[in-house]
Length: 311
Ligand code: CA
Image (tube, rainbow, N blue to C red):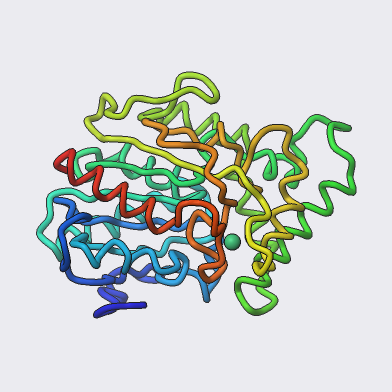
């Protein structure tokens, strides 16, 4: 549900867009000092881009005081290109609100995208929260891009995973979208490319795979992360089958597309919620694990954590 939704500055931002979800109201539980900016991952196709990607999450945050913005960056592009687009949009949000900084929350590829912005302009970013973030590669991306050592996975498993991924995109976008774009975007999410990226933009990262990073990094920015570690969580959600297929390339706990260990950034809140990669953003259409904390509750709790830190 959108409250007072409006699209701001489309002409200024070119193809990118920013929408404000709601004005601050309610009990104040989520009333952070700085606006919260939600940064989507690689499922950037039309019907899920921007507002709907975060299914019901903006209003869950704003109803108790958070000022929430949803940005829209290129779905299929490198982390650095997406990060530059995000920086432009952060500056627009700061100009519109008069705020000095923002709190970034990124899902999937949105995690590294937010990290790039914080690394380049730590003066504009109070915190980065990564949800199911591809911070240390994705074995799914490695498999589909062919960067795993030869013979380490049967070809039919890789083909099945790629098909599973394409079917998720097709299902969620409601039309035969172009999955080849999203698979091309996986280049940024291979282990080799994320290791390169982490060398250039290390803030908040653990110093070894699966470790914890600092809650407050040397650049003054706070870093947090959480992730799920499940695949099939709701029998009504058709996208679960796709995530089960993609999960077959992994050899460690994962949410279907990202390993629990790769999701680690800064303070690790938890890396094994009973959620798959899409449950983490309350998809598809709110079909999540009924026997786990609701994803919206996690976002609200994180806003409260940021508020209590004065962020
Ligand atoms: Ca789901």
